[in-house]
Image (cartoon, rainbow, N blue to C red; front, top):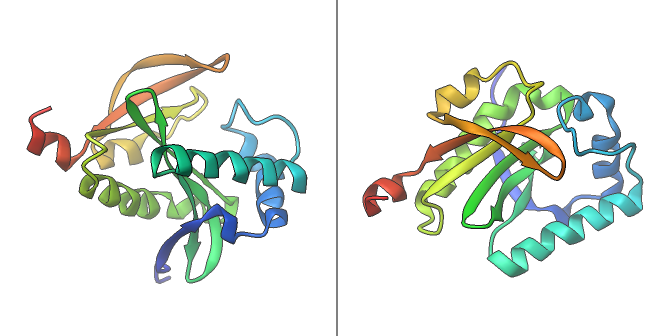
Length: 165
């Protein structure tokens, strides 16, 4: 099966009802300890507004990912202090596209001088960490974020190697 052409668009381009259905799927919540209950359209709209605030504040944020024009999920970079954290939340039927999407997003990070490295926070329930290793990420420890424990990984970008960081 051919891989779809991936494009990144702002979350505002996606119908909030589509995001609400995506985030209400129990398979999505299995590895999202901060996700609380089903989403409705108002929750999806508030989520998109919060992510747009990140774009306004930092000039970068989360995108919606499209595959051949179809909504696959969302994710991207969010500034956490001095770090840029990368997240990826796909529709269950699109889980197999995670590595492809992550590689394309990380190519973006490598070209952006603001991003010397990328962090990833994964809940301990995630057992399949091979894709992170294939990307070159290394585990740096555990952190508490909003009352939940996460495994933290770090990936150096090309810009960090050029800058000697």
